[in-house]
Image (cartoon, rainbow over all chains, first blue to last red; front, side):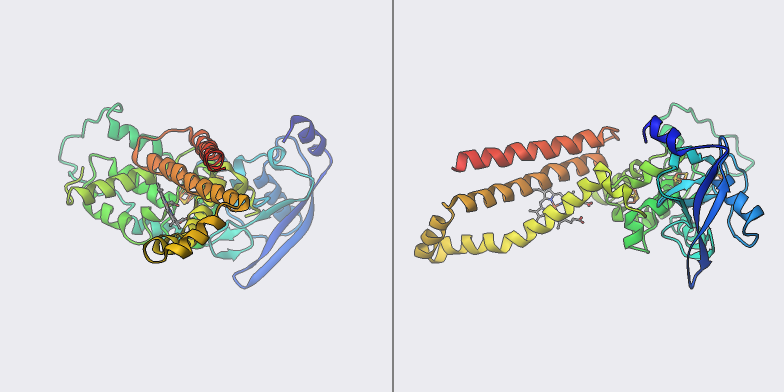
Length: 252
Length: 113
Ligand code: HEM
Ligand code: SF4
Ligand code: SF4
Ligand code: FES
């Protein structure tokens, strides 16, 4: 949006028209609210104001308010965003600000989506670190410049917010697809020399619903609030998998 | 979603790839039929080839060549994305693939008329 339009529409001190989705797994709809507009107001501030002043039973999730915990993601004007770090100024338009639960996940109540399948898929992609050594061994010395470590570092700062999962049209079309976040996590572990489950994880991410379901749209990368690139991570898994196939399983 | 992400260049590239792939698949039976005529029915093939001299048919053929090259260059971009080290210039490559296809398609048309 142009700077001029932004200042035209964003008027702290006046009021803001907001529509919030309310309901549960059986259905629901948008309810309209008028919220005092403030300087530096975030979308999460708007939701909190509504709950504290207008709709005490409104259900939503947040914890850290500083973009660390990944619990506050919602659809804002139809796009997935971390609401605690999304300023109203940035997303305001001619129409009321529209806030809804995350796409591609079942809803529990109001703005709280059911994250169970999202995390189940992390487990299915073998997102757990499998130590190759015990506490009695010496600490592994790994240079941050080592290529595999650099690949892991580039993808490691995921806050499990599911914004990418909500943005992915492949998840929308195929509920069995593991999705960008779980596969991105698997890629960081495949790039971790200390991990001991490389072969099992490669099987997990190469099976049905795995990395080969990705069509490289890059919607995940466009929306990831931490500017991670799950598309590149998934491409990395596709390479590992193809290479392992061509060499008869002698990968790494 | 509201659909704004569907207007993103790379999302459009993905749809172009899908639609061109499906259109090519639909065209293939006709293509094989014509090839079959060359083997079995020379007279019928000649009638058919005369029909293809029609300028409208030439335009349609240029469209098909365009679809094939869109799908080819777009597919090569995807294969490079997936099998070569990551490059952040995907929108540029998608645009290059599209413009290369326009050249190929126009080149075909000009040499055909
Ligand atoms: C000329 C060389 C070709 C190349 C390099 C190529 C490459 C590709 C690639 C990389 C994909 C995967 C896209 C994705 O992950 O979404 C694909 C999908 C596809 N291709 Fe091709 N292809 C070629 C020729 C053809 C031809 C001749 C046809 C038609 C018979 C065709 C039909 C399709 C279809 C229907 C899809 C599925 C599209 C989708 O899932 O969205 N391709 N192609
Ligand atoms: S690149 Fe893959 S994971 Fe990312 S949005 Fe597209 S299909 Fe989903
Ligand atoms: S990859 Fe990005 S968008 Fe996806 S869960 Fe992690 S931080 Fe969120
Ligand atoms: S509340 Fe923790 S990331 Fe938004």
